[in-house]
Image (tube, rainbow, N blue to C red; front, side, top):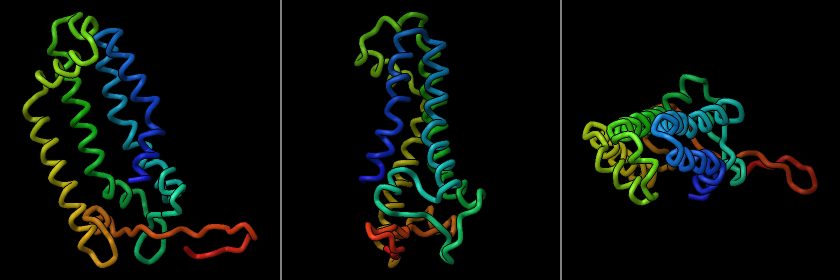
Length: 178
């Protein structure tokens, strides 16, 4: 939860830019939504590929690696984050479809709450079904995480990954295993 709060804070500027775009034009809003749908997956994949952890995990002293303590390969990282990638892309494309279905100028001239309602009302049923499936996935992922001996979620089993305490330097400079 704390790591996800950090992720939300890191991605907040993207979200604010997206909100701003909805007051500019339908075309700018569509492009912004599609870019935003890539932001979280790119953030997660890039940082895990480079460091084995996101900024949230860094702050909490956690690291994602293979069960044998090796770094995850790109393919394993993509497998681990494939549900997030798919969900974000489907949500972005679905939102873009909803925005494009609105008459020109309606989105821009509406209040923020009206914008949200209009987009929700025009959201494609296929995208809504995919979002519902992703919600079920997340629920099952949490159940498996809580029930598993080593606190591994489904995406960890699929990618052959584990989340461990990372090695940190103490104030005295000694290397400690967490």
